[in-house]
Image 1: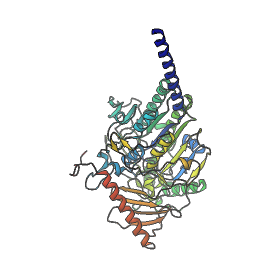
Image 2: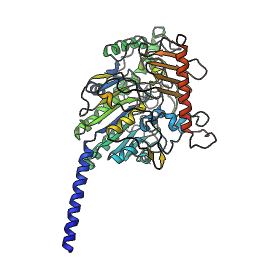
Image 3: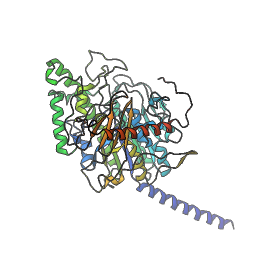
Image 4: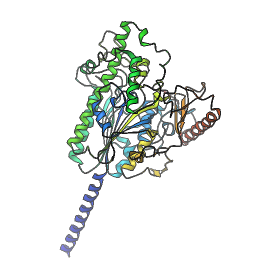
Length: 524
């Protein structure tokens, strides 16, 4: 009897082992997912989107993947990250301004029903990794990430004081240590991939690689700066025109060049000294994008070395348009320091933001096209049947979560930790991998720093602040928003304004549904 019991146990264990192995093999067939997020990179900075910056690794991904030409972000760092990782508009999950309750969504706390993607992917067998900027509420390891390198010091590329691994603080980096943030972020991503290959070879992974580059301060490695020293001496006016011509040839846009942002002088009115100073400034931005591409190349090499490249879906995009902001934080700006060094603190500013976002209008924080448009590259050798094609399907960050969940073989749950999960506004982009225009939105919506917009079909209604009149554009013929049609179509303006207001009310009600009745006090 005893021996018979032992035999029965052995049979059960062998059966369970076979089931476990089959489950692991099934999970290994699921695609890995890698999101690569740039910070404050313009719509046309990449070579494959018409820019003159050297980005061979991203260009190669585009050549063998898909490029989306009408993909949108939220125009700011933290709301974009919330939209990517939750699949909701940032206001819905309190990660952007909720009028009367949250004055600045940077400090808002997500509702309990709004988990991040890694928490949703882990039950599907995924190991999850984060490296780089966070800018969300909560912490990475408490939000579903198995490993995390978190860089919270956004003012120092060479010697950050605030960074952590697996949410445990790391020592401040000493000056002249050889640390550079873009390289360090890639190093940690590569280390997690190596660890994954060694410990979990049968499991799919989700890696969220969030660079801080090329966000200000413009700090870059000397060898990268040298490559662009004389690249921008022709100035922003001529180079914007060149970018537009290349973009038209690539099929990215077919529109006019938007006017220079008010306050930006014509390049030819500058003195020789001013031209040199400004040419050096753009060289820093280009050097930072170039270095990011180099580090992406190292991550790709690791994917290939571990045999994961073919079945990894790579998404590359930017959290907002290039920045026209001008500020000094961190250690201040030493005017005698070499531009781009650790002791300098320079910003791109408006003239060059016009180039980075060319041919589109305005920049980060605004919800005109220059602020909310981003390149999106999708690369997946094992899954994409076509390569090198463009996709004009209007889409948004809210679409990434449902896309990734569909690829993983799952979907957003109806309840989360006992709370009902509201319907999410995003749509899976998987059909667009095959057919352009196959993913339909009734509308796309924006609200940030009182700037507001809604897109319905080819029509876009947009305004700066609440006290300025609405502008109306047909983006099919006027992507650069140069011909305001509001006076010609007053009924359309009225209908779209009503739609914008209805969604504002809907999103606000969702955000405050389980909040305290008193407004949240603000402070940093």
